[in-house]
Length: 458
Image 1 (cartoon, rainbow, N blue to C red):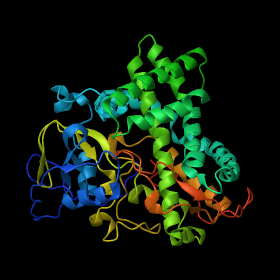
Image 2: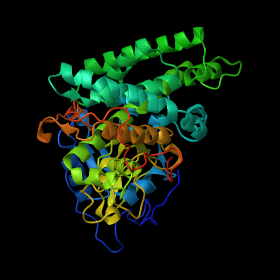
Image 3: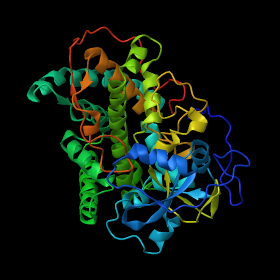
Image 4: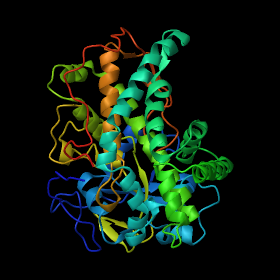
C-alpha cells in the first residue's frame, strides 16, 4: 500500500507519548466505557462521540465485554503496526480465561482460522495465496468482466423497478450481485451457494442477534463452505479454492482444513460485503448532495475521488475487531491493558479534524487531505482486496449514473434502516427511483472510474 500520510504525531508506548495528540496537551479525563449499540443505530453519531473522547476509548462490547477502540487517524495508524500488538486470540485475556460466553456475537472475528487472526510467519503463509489471487495483474484482467456484469445488472433494473411500482432496491438489485459474482468467480464458488453464503456472512457480522442464532449460523456457514470445497475437489479450476485445496492436500501441507475453510470465509465475506456497502454508501452520498455529483460530471473530480471520499467519510467498516496489546500500552493518556480486545475504529478515524480539517464530517469529492484514509487498514494486515474493491466501485458508480442520470432516493433518508451491526456500516435496503434511462449507449460521464493501478490502490 502506498502511503501519502503526514508524519505521525506519536506512537503508542508503555510510557507516555500520546499518539494523535498535540505535544503538551493534557490527556483526556477518564470516563465510563462507551456502550456500543449492537443494532448499528447512530453509527455516525457514535463515530463523532468516540472521536471526541480521545485517541483510545474504553468501550462496552456485546454481552458486557470490556474493550477499547482506537479512534484517531495517527493513533490508529501507529497502533496497526505496533510491534507489541497482536492479532492471534491467544492474547485475548477474557477469551483465554473463559469469560466469553458461547455464542458471543464477535467470537468469529477472534477465532476464525485465517490471516486476520494470525501473526508473523503464520500470517504471511495464510495471506500469500489470497494476495496471489488478487494480484494487480489478475485484478486488471477482471476489468472487462466487471464492466460486462455491471451492464447486465443495469439492463435488469428497469424491470425490477416496474415490478416494485417504480422503485427498486439498489442494494439487492445491483450493489450486491456485482461484487458477489466477481468474488465467487475468482474464488470458485458455484452459483447455488452464493445467496446463502451472503445471508450467513451477514449473520456473522450481526452484533444484535441472539447466541443461538450465532452458533447456528456459524455451523451452517462451515457446512456450506465444506460443500464449496468438495465441489472444487471434484472439479478443480483456476480459482482460489482450488489453489488452497492443493496447498492443503500436498504431501507437505501448507495449511490445514480449518485454515482452508477460514480463508474462504474471510475472503468471501470481505470480498463482497465491503464493496457492496461501499457502492451503496457512495450512491447515498451523491443522492444527498447532487452538487457533488455535478463536480464529477463537470470534470472537477473523478469517480476515483468519489470512492476515496466515501471510504473516508462513510467507511463500509466502522469498527473492525480485534487486536490485542501484548503489554499495557498508553495511547493518548489512556492505558489499554494487555489482552484487551481493541477495535480499529475506521469510521471515527475518517472524521479526524486534525487530518481532514474542521469540515471532516462533510462529504467533499474535491477534498485533498494531507493523509490517506485508513479504511482498508495499514501495515502487514492491509486489505489485499482493496484494488478489486476500488475497481468494482469505480466502474459501478460511473456506469450507474451514466445510465440513470436522474437516479434518486425514493424515501426520506431518515427512513433508511442501518445494518444490525457496529462492525459494518450501511443500510439494509436502498430504494431508489431510476428516472430517465439514457440506455446502454448513454453519454459517459467525464470523471474516470477508479483503477487498480491508480495511486494508492492497495
